[in-house]
Length: 282
Ligand code: 15L
Image (cartoon, rainbow, N blue to C red; front, side):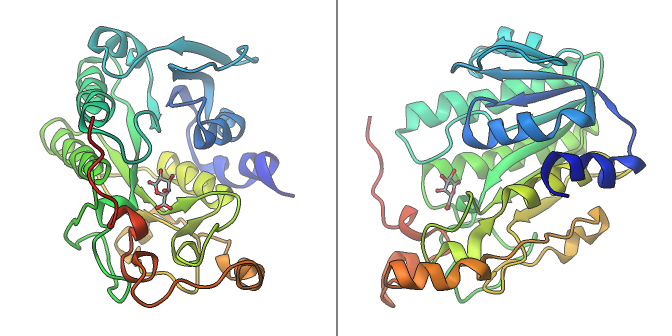
């Protein structure tokens, strides 16, 4: 048994069903995966994006909303007891773009959460680009210092800081997941270390909503890759055990491309070529 059926039968037993789970960025790649796989966590899914979300299916409501629109976000968050925040700018971009979606956007989201009649538990899609300038020879855990590799990485560090402040001041619980490379399979040799399978991502989100006390942890979002640089021992209490590994793709990758040379950013830095990219000017 795989996928949605397994999510339903194995993990949900111990948790109380959410009433309304908001997924921001629901039309994106990960948003679509979550839309298809997290419905069982809540009585109702509220899906939001600026881009087309198609027709609402049973148990879904669709709200078109730009994260930089404070009033719209206030309405969007109202009544949601869970949020999977995938919305915003998902890769490097000019500062104005990052600022609107990932800086103003996340403050709008947490202000709305603070003022909502129900306090939501939040999953924040952070990124490995919050620590991208660490070299691949280093082993990181949740206490390692941030080393963002661009405006995008800076915005993820900011998002983690916002989550931390709202937890300390107002008790809002957030899991900040520093997602590695969440794709159907690793696309290059760097991703043998950073790859996160869709199944492991879903298992992690299910655990975040299942545990009685979440707090405000930083979690590295990677599968059980033999080549991993990241240590999640700090968050063992979540009971998340990634079950997939990038090793099953190694031979295929070796057959289709050369590994990067020793001084290639993809072989030096955890954030790969994000570290060698220049600033994206407007
Ligand atoms: C990310 O944060 C991006 O959203 C994704 O497109 C990939 O670039 C990924 O990081 C990665 O580092 O592989």
